[in-house]
Image (cartoon, rainbow, N blue to C red; front, side, top):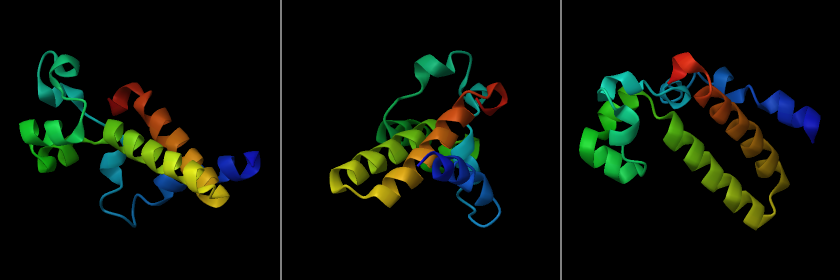
Length: 106
């Protein structure tokens, strides 16, 4: 499935203009959250929204939680033995995790 994985790995970027929720999934601007943002930011989405509100998190990026959400969907696709979903979600997960390694995205 390598060719399909490579082809679909850009799908999240291709949705940027069509889906208003998509852009925030590609980054997290940690500088907004203070001098020690990595120590202060809750890891769980519900705890982070309780501390900062969902609107704030979406404004400054949700990349870590997006990667977790797609990983959970991928796990379920494996449980269901849904090959098409496994390939699509694997490609998308590779994209979002890659985004987290771009210094200007974090």
